[in-house]
View 1 (cartoon, rainbow, N blue to C red):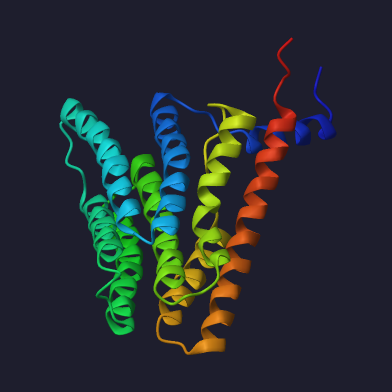
View 2 (view 1 turned 60 degrees about the vertical axis):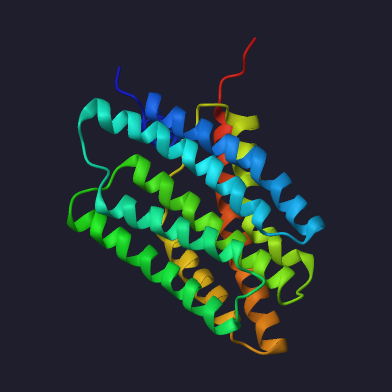
Length: 252
């Protein structure tokens, strides 16, 4: 008996909303869950102690563990890490350095560091596609690096520029999202990169970079627009997650 068009359309919709996961996806999800659990308390401690180095050290430990797991996988399969992943690693090292040097950074140096981070983010994606180095780990690693950039910028504007504490919230959105994925979908939901998300990320990253040199009200407007863009992007991701959670079969 042939399925009706409506049934076929519904089946296609359900298939689209559910991304199959394997052992690598689950390991990467576990790493993201750990980062989401540990990083927000480190951010809170950094704010209370006025010491961004707390977040820097936490990032070194968390991403060191992530890379150690990847190194073992690369050794087993005898494959190189890829130039794009090395550039993402350099981005993280640059951001960790910025977090350690808040006390001595000038707006010009901060702009240069943030601009370098944004340029490397653009370049590593193009290199990965040109060299056929795109893989799930690279995509995952890049998203974590993007989140660290937004968080580093938020802490800079809070601890150095004296902006209100809301400026840190966009940098914690990914952690909140990962905890929601963990709670609502367990290990049964893989993140997917969307074209609109890349556009929003590019605009937000550029605004954060420019805000380091903007005066007073202009800086506040740039940061507020960044927060609105990122909150809107994550709102769509949360909606997709809730739809997926609603379609999961209930456990009797």
